Length: 241
Image 1 (cartoon, rainbow, N blue to C red):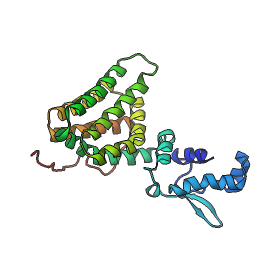
Image 2: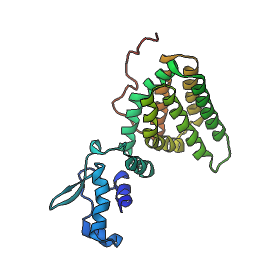
Image 3: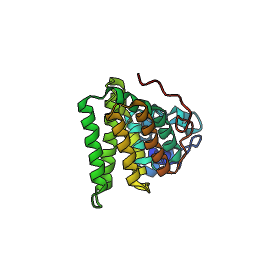
Image 4: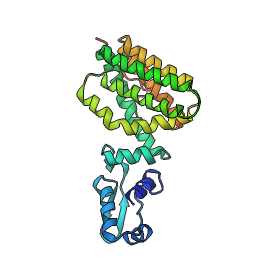
């Protein structure tokens, strides 16, 4: 039942401010007793997605209140949020604010092993894109996420590295959806190549801009505007020294 409600909420059928069905109706629909229904609703309450209002029922909270880094929430997000442009926009805006800096730091700190990991992930993307249909698109997305995770790890910072694992499901959501709808896969691959080369050749500012370009392509493929972010701004980059 918790999965049913999560799918309905992340998919946008129940929006912030909406009340989900009452306990008695959920109990009847899923042939559960009231205590089991309360237990499932508690899962959504504990991660900030819904709130219980005495005498009224359970209401969906504003997205800002959701604990999107909780493993249960990131799992639901990956499985159910693809049709929801609001959630996609929030994730993309965060990535636009973070990943150019991550790429810039990787260009300064990446070890030889890091560069190999980035290159192997890129080569996997390239091979999958040129492969026959079937699992090719899934493999392309798998290598794409590995490419971005490798860049996080190349910062040589334990917090960024760990954050890449926490963010992995939400990043995968955008990557899988944008790869499905991309009209220019060759151009997208070239943008990833330019990012890889900027990191490999120790060009932090170019890596920053290349990461922006990769994410701009993601935004275009998704058909959404990312909102407030560094994309397209006149941001003054830090010096290369």
